[in-house]
Length: 156
Image (cartoon, rainbow, N blue to C red; front, side, top):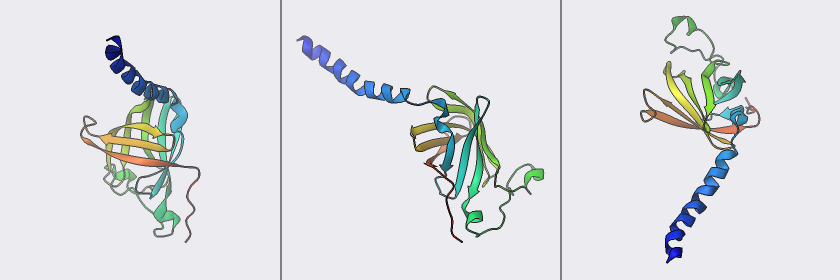
């Protein structure tokens, strides 16, 4: 009779234990490095400034393959920034690490010129989930980025 009562608890522990062990493997600096965007048209380098994490656009496919000579931040709501190149701009900033995710940050979408609240989460060591939203995360969009070891080589 006691085995019937204990069996569900043992099953639950068996399912939860691997998840809790995996969570402990994440370190706050695991996010650092180069990430290829979901559309595979840009590489973002995640760096750290003090205790906050940020990302700069370090490679743009259209510039690398010669399709375009220049891509400007033409949708920026600040007119004084519309003439700047997108190459090298800070796309996201202000993220701090807390409870297995990087949160309280903002991300700039150069295609729309809008800035959104955001959080980042590692799905595994080579997959980064980025969620941008307005108000609450329910009202937003998720993008999945892939870690790369180096900036892609593009032949002209």
